[in-house]
Length: 186
Image (cartoon, rainbow, N blue to C red; front, side, top):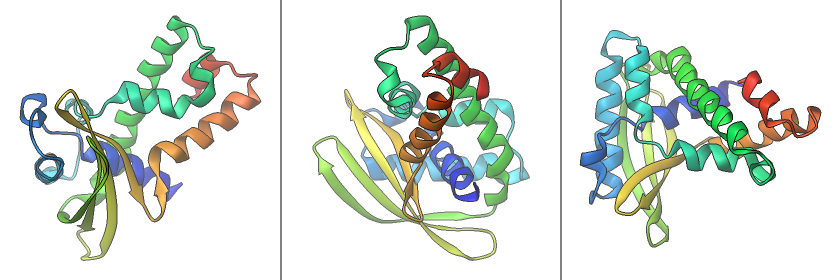
């Protein structure tokens, strides 16, 4: 639970760069800028609803939420998907507001960038928390028509979206594949 919360917060913390700044930028520049923005938002040890929304403006929430839904994305109606996407965005914002304040006073350092394929890279960073503990965090950054967006975050061997997908799968399986029930649980 702590790992999942940290990963959710890390993913959302890395999402605060304006859309104009992301376009035609490098993945490293995105991570560098978003880490600075996240730390600025956390200067008062809190994250407002507007700040959380700002952080989420740089994630391809649709792509992330669809992947997390897994096989059920093919059978869900448009109305169910819309409801689920709204609930998923709210869930991420709530996770940010609940957990991100624990990382106020921290810093990020880019360690390496590993190309997966053209337009899809993993930026490896070292996050130092306020207590001086260094934590390796990797950010999957993908180009969508020249617009670099963070689509996943890895911490201690767990990728957020893959972890969420497993949790969502369990909820969906327990509810006969009812995407509405998953949206309600978020």
